[in-house]
Length: 191
Image 1 (spheres, rainbow, N blue to C red):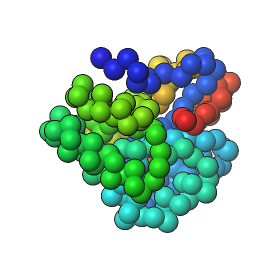
Image 2: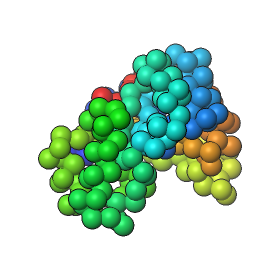
Image 3: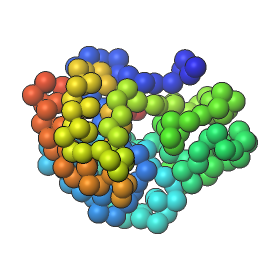
Image 4: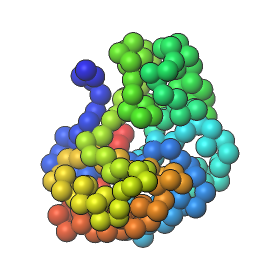
């Protein structure tokens, strides 16, 4: 459906950790600390409103040289908005931080919105493995099993640095990073 969007990495020994929905106090700061401990880069698809609410945490992401992606200004569900309204929200984010990386919230995008984003030179990024870290019934072990079983190299992994995912992220992130290190995968930010 989206031939120019990115779902995987082009290199089988690379892995990309991505985090959606931040920056959020405590959660994003925890993720930054874990990534710093392991000295690995990641990509954060931020929500513009959250950047405005928590500029200090956003600055920490930049200081730690993580890649930043646009996750809309208001975390809009594309299916509920016209292409024009949706694009306005995406461009509102762009005024806060200039990045060509874009990931649609909920992974939803109408074909007309997809085309409009491409016309504005956005690089649309989805994922190849979703962690389900936001799901209230998900257990730590089940979440870890899902992502580990699907990790062979070349994947873009979707986590969330949101309050509802913190219970799982705080348990699985270090274990998952160590799992990837044992597979000799190289962590790369998206660009």
